[in-house]
Length: 558
DNA sequence: AAGGCGTCCAACCGCATGATA
DNA sequence: TTATCATGCGGTTGGACGCCT
Image (cartoon, rainbow, N blue to C red):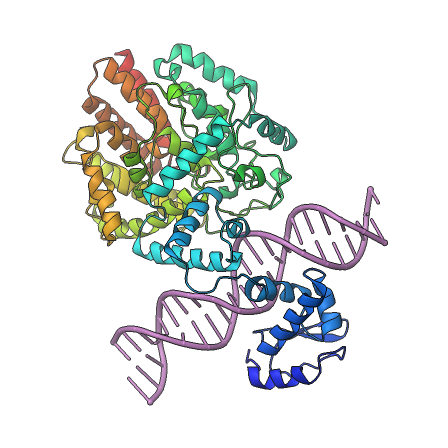
């Protein structure tokens, strides 16, 4: 489309901008409205002047009247946009300041792609500006294979989330659930609770993980490619919508994480888990352990059907959720799962992370930030991994490291291909999660040997100085922390993993033994996958996490 | 100098929501 | 209750521009 020059159009408009229909000059595309061809394309200074003048006289709003009465041959939407983004007073122009950038990152961590809401926190900035900034930033960081959120942002989000939790807010969650007819059978929880008496590690399961996964996991339907359209939730719920972030008080009060739960509840487009079945884990105990009775495959990261790159069915559009820090009630986690620390946040960002916190984060629809980071990071890392892991996939002798390697690869090659989206960000994400996070290397099965994700040789990503610092800093982490942030499966189920490890430690079982078992279990999963013994639907990344549990259980019963 | 390529950003488009007739 | 309109939001597009080869 060629554009009318400012000069020529300025001249034309300056002559008369009264109620005479403008005849499209043919230079600019336009659409007919009431027989008038409305202009499209870049605004000229003359048009701006007309619009400004009109708004001064009549105020904002009633934008369609602008076209009728001012002689501007622009549709109302165009006028509104032009005014809002360029002409209204107090608009800040120019590059974002460091403070604004920090705020954007922070807000995005909380809100996800809620540009308008973010703009409300940035006086003088428009949603469009912020959106453009973020998109370019994403692309840049994506290319660089870097995490989107600096640790301090995650930490702050975490703290705010805790504050919000303390403020309460469970009631509306339940309401929302009911409104959406998302019912979680009591029997599911009964099973879980029953297992708490049977399985020592279940006993320590924090309510929080269940409820948070309920809420956030259910709420993450926008990541489900298989979300039934019947589970429709309007694309956007406005501020009037009751928040949805926790299941219900019967399990635990779940205050809404951050403020966005108020109006982003439909970002929590809850998916109806019905119709999904437990597809791979033959262990009934493990099944029962699955949180909230959800089928494993219902987690976006747990099944290969999720694709952030392809449209989901119905209204389950892939609206990124915001980063959400889960229930961080330290008391509920017991001694083995302390509150995430700052360094944890580092790892949290740098690599997909496991703790119960992340677990719910990943499940959360409001987690766009983190999931974004995971996806982007994963894309880069997984491509690097794919290049370097060709040989591992063909190896018949598998070391633990190889297992995870080929496991990862098979994850990609089987599950993501199944869903017809081989380049699905999540597919890559899952792959990279494993490649990056699986700490159990051939050189040592001890959990203490876990290397920081960024030290993996497969990653040839250049790190910015600050980010490199985070990475290096993690080398000094305690084993438990490394566990938290390097277990691939921990990404989804590590709260239980942590609990289990802690329990095993209490029982005098070495972490090495646990690691070996887990590796074996991983290998088992891997073999299952490679052998195609699992259904093509509904399972994936999280499988090892859940399967790990029985392994630990066995340890505890030794 | 010219072409390719990537980035930035203004603007458009489709959809959802709320108000009102 | 339904239809229509106005508005707002988020995703996407496409042109301008700069850099590189």
